[in-house]
Length: 274
Image 1 (cartoon, helix red, strand yellow):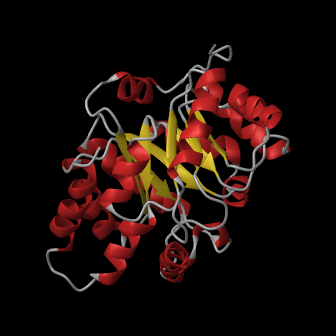
Image 2 (cartoon, one colour; image 1 turned 135 degrees about the vertical axis):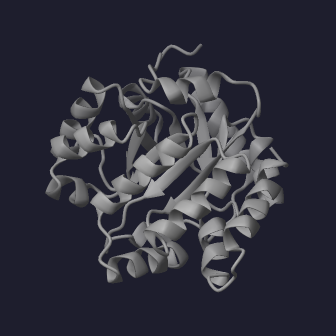
């Protein structure tokens, strides 16, 4: 079927999803500048070196209610240190200088971009050589989301959209039509890191998407262990997204002098299951 053809826009993301190795990509979420910009960079370098295909870098906000308590705690820490979205974009420049192939998605809330403002934000992330943006709280009917999408499209940057088990068929089609890069399939309702996903439900949803579009699907929420990642990979997505498990590992081991290297080993244990 695949009657909705989606253009990825970001050439780097397109190349990542066209590659057959690894079959299922690991998409990892990090809170930008957590626990500090230099430390954040060292942690992310290890993630890249240990097999992460796409980085989701969260820019911080006091509104991180959908992220769950672990990620919100990290957001609150970054805010308490007065690190800003500009600091996160500077971090992305360093990441891109370190690696030219990894995908980079900025993830957060629309209010930060509106204040930046949106055209300047897109210009700056273009100059930083990011690939895409995912805005958690901006439905496609929102005026600001339309402004963001138009600016991203002009700069060949992708807009990642979320779909959930509660998304009805017509809305799913509407979202796919304006998405690019990949579709973030939320496996469970509620906040991230709090529930586990049902494999058959996830597979049925992925099959539904594949029946109407060629857009890559990455599945996330509720993936806490390498075994969880393996089970989700077996449902047929293009990528598996892990966030809370990695942020929690960082939080639990902040005093570890070898935290970057040990985080890399932890991340690699997920990659090996994909």
